[in-house]
Image 1: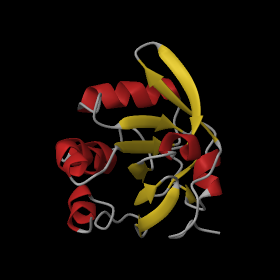
Image 2: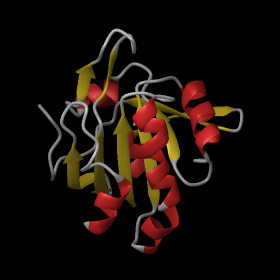
Image 3: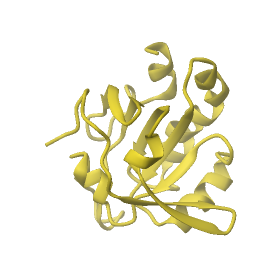
Image 4: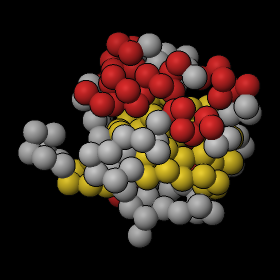
Length: 160
């Protein structure tokens, strides 16, 4: 079943690499006690994710904070090292938490896991964005396959 407005974010294991340390967390723990935006993407270093989706949230990070967002997270079915390297390359450090869902457990728990082309090699997270308060989904934007519009940073910003 796909996550919906009013649902709680899952408590499945994620990893976050900051500097050289990798910490374990979950979406529920990451969002606890704050208002967050979570974007999910099919893959680190992929064209739409790297050139459009994540950069929009990096560019608007301060504007989101001015509207009451405490944190922005980017989740992908990749390992923590890949997510950290990707975040460093696109300038996400200090603006967007790069959340590694290495086994795809959180994506599966949210019902947004998708089977991709053989090029990406395994199940991935579908392209989405959501706003949650204290771990409860308040707004949800799920893209159709191969689309990029309703999960864009500008689209979410206009609806806060």
